[in-house]
Image 1 (cartoon, rainbow over the protein chains, first blue to last red):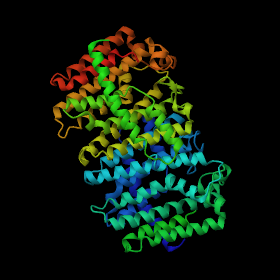
Image 2: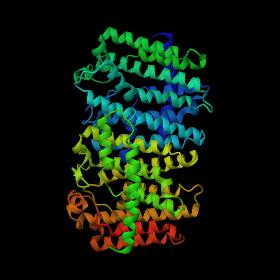
Image 3: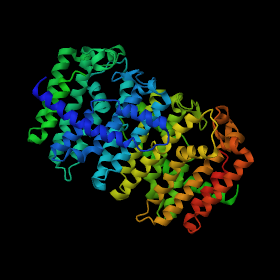
Image 4: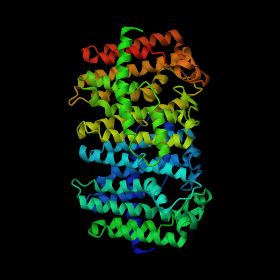
Length: 298
Length: 298
């Protein structure tokens, strides 16, 4: 493990501890149905790398904001991510039984509970942002706006729809990137932007640089996912190896070849790192996060 | 048809026209997937009485706010209602093929599109509230807070979970009311409160009176729904008659008998009307809406 990877792992661990404590707290309060709440907790608290919260916290630090002051948006992002995984895994969607080495929510509970747990987690994300007393009404509203846009039909859900329509189809590189920009890119971009927006007066140039970083990183993340799907083992990646290929989903390696995909990944990584050129050591967590995305094995 | 019913129908028609135009506009903008957008439009624009938007607009008027100034929250409420119907109708939930006399969304499209359309509509509701330039950041945030709470695991989705857990079970009247307070009551309460919150400086006593009105009306609405399920014909109510009974769902008539349910309905209606005692003619739309809920045939 390189030194930078070690730093990234340390930062990720710090973020994970902060975020997991906060997530545990915000689904602890009494809901109407114990079973629903159990399904929500199972889905959110069952591990996960917390990459989106970590990016949010890292972007906050790049704007000289304390990690603790960015916890609400970081958790809201993870709640939306968790809900999207639950719905993605449903029989009518990707029909996955295994996620992070554990039964998916509709297997551990039932389909109806899984649908409702996802629905409730999305609402909870906005609840959390709206009740974030760390910041002004205006700043909270900016967060709601970012997340609603990134999560909706012009963002993540739109990307999932394109993904479903693309099964068995030959896509161009442009079409593949368009899908990923929506499906995973929008929420990764929102993660970085919401972290930056934790600054009381976010500088426009810096916000734009961080947006460029996030877009490049979002695509790099996906290229690495595709490579892992071919190269990783089921044990390490937590889902059957080669499952995307088996479903005839278009991937970067299927379009560019494995070597071509690796080159593409490194170009995107360089773009992400270059966009941070005007930042000092306050952006080191973002830099190590970018390297981690490429070096990770799952 | 009584004079009050006629007034309610006229008010509902005015609201429906305003709301339908606005809903059409807000799902018209380019999304990522045409099919997803078509499923969203099919679900939202396929008719419906628009009772929640009408309650929101009527509450705005009771606070001397112009109907047009309450359109964004009215539409956001309908988007959440529409998404909940889509997910409710899914095979894993109520498994309904017919809604308002038309094929349900997962029949007209497919299950995956229906799940995603619901997800996207929820996000769009918050998007709409956050971008409502008619009001201050603080007021917009109050709307987001109301809706997120009413839609989530402590509100509507929590109620749906209780509902699913109750199939085939004997419930007490208290348990039945608890389910309805969450499942349909929370969003009806939010409809009235969000309308009232359109006032630049909502009077606390008036807001509380309107909340009492909304709670009583929400339950009355459900009692009438249960009665219609027994008494109405498939043609008029748009779903197979007696379908709740057939699924062994607990209902007011099954607990109180038909006459008992009717009495309960009229008590709730009286409570709703009494709570408006301190209001003048500005609350007439709310008064006629309450009468309409009891007199409606579907």
